Image (cartoon, rainbow, N blue to C red; front, side, top):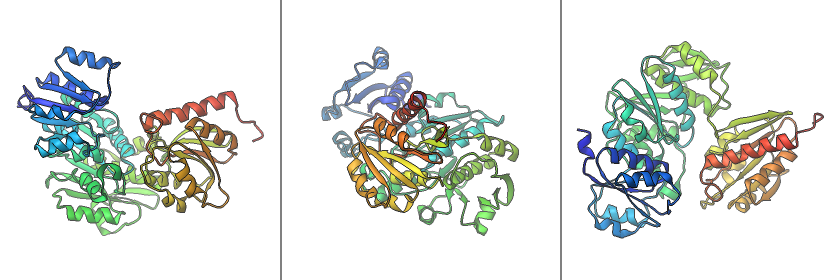
Length: 465
């Protein structure tokens, strides 16, 4: 039956990169007639030659509307490409179905899908859930999605008892129709990605697609402390069994049905799970991520001792409030994944020490004054990229904070390094997307790490500091 979904189907892939490549490789093996369209030239990509030899066609250098003169059974769009571009708008007018790879995977995936979304925290939560389930000998567990592993590279490996843990962005979810996770997690919802979704309501509706096909046999885990999210879930009409998690609002609903933090310990539906004394992840936001992951572990019948062992060993996701060095009383933190204001606020709230703040990046049109209530510990701001002048307008309002502007991240990091004193945190939390100077946030974070390590090697701090 799965073969019939693809065999001899005419399928247009818009956008190549890692996701598009995985889709093309998957479809050509299923017998589909595949055309890839990308605005780049792809001339140096070796994977393109391999696909051409298998019969895949490539149209590069733009998105010509003439492509739609051919009959397409459906289009698979790279999640990062907005629906506003001309070829997507024209395809919608022609009623050509437009999906993301997540939707395609859901048609054929065996086993249980565990889907995680949210404005912030979804990568950490996803990794925690994967680590917990991977530590169990009850089933095989696979990791995929927005965390950097294309889901179509995994689905053919799945057996009915396996677990597929998927990080899901709003970009991916918007291109779904029948996607049906057995367990869905919504970490939180804040205003984000308005340049892509146009309105906050559109963004919310994309996120809520994670639960639209769930039944009374499925589960929806959500942050109970966020009143807006709790209300949205009530209004969504979801049929799933609700599992709230909470750090602050501990009431009878949470005690009976959810997972919560109380008296320096974590409980699941009234059952003691573990102490929080040895957890290594900093900040309340990470405690919330841990609660969500424990809810999944308990639904999967994992032992509390195993849960505690896995949680206590976990030190965090690369590029997300990641401590990369502690030297001479100074702590260097890579939070390159902070591509919006909410994420940077989370980072600023995670530390009690004085902060040397490094930020900047792609200008999406927003201001930065929302940061002001959380900037009390900032000693200096080191700003670069397209937004440096706009961010300076905000930081100039802070008394006693020295603001400096730089052309690039290396220069900003170097000056913060020289200025930092013992007992301070040097924090890269850009508050912006990376695309003005980098291909992606991972590249930006790697640049920060490389710069710090080079400075520590070439010009180490003096012992008296």
